[in-house]
Image (tube, rainbow, N blue to C red):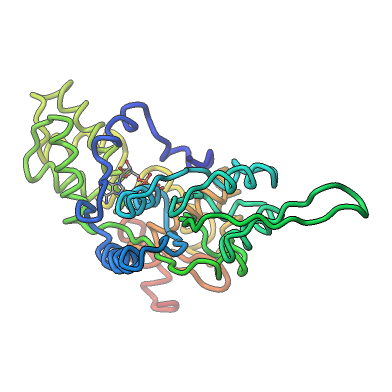
Length: 340
Ligand code: ADP
């Protein structure tokens, strides 16, 4: 389930089809995320060895890095089925009670955007995760009583872009918490290469490198750029993705050499031009360019931090020397050496 606010990353119909063909099904097929993969392998093998359900597991990180993909891989490796839901989809306590009471032994319950679960819902989840029990209130008023129903041993796999928003009691119920990092260039190149083969588009090494370089370290973005570059090569060229045709197509889409898009640049420019390089609060930046603060926090900021284009300080965000250089804006503060 995709949050409305991350609209620029939402799935297109072709993306859904491609996704089915491409989504790695087993740990061995997962490209990148080496640290997470090796940790998961141990967790899974240990659980299988003891013939137990996997411990509750949480993935966090920016959108598009493969959180649901990993949840499906876990279910496949555990030879278990998976039920998929999302924090905002569970509105009433009864919704969750219905899901929980239908779970099977070792089944994976994937909860996307788990930080958006309501407080009352979380309260039901605690005993379910810890004691595999569901407390049902029967009747009303003074005659009401609680009946405890035991549940099969199942596994919650949670995903969030905002670990900080997760309540402490919920967080402690997870036996394993993994951060997903942006993918490095070789991993993204492999993902793009595999996708090009599935799409049956001819592509040379430079074309592949160009798309991966501008893919924001994010498989979903790189795969989308691949499809747009394919369109361009088909319409304006001979259908082959080369370094040149990829470069031209991406320039037309206003994706620059480091993968920044229009929104990324607007955020950077706002910090530099309107707030003299910062420090400035995220809400102020968002208001000044008319964008949702959540989008900036979830989608824009992690990548700019990764590139070293902004710094997060207690007083707000600051543009770094690298950001000025990238945008070609003269930087008097840094030249005088007053701040850095
Ligand atoms: P998230 O919830 O973190 O946004 P998804 O699991 O929906 O991530 O993945 C986003 C897209 O990227 C999907 O199309 C998925 O197939 C692809 N993807 C993610 N991780 C990988 C990977 N390691 N290898 C290949 N494709 C991947």
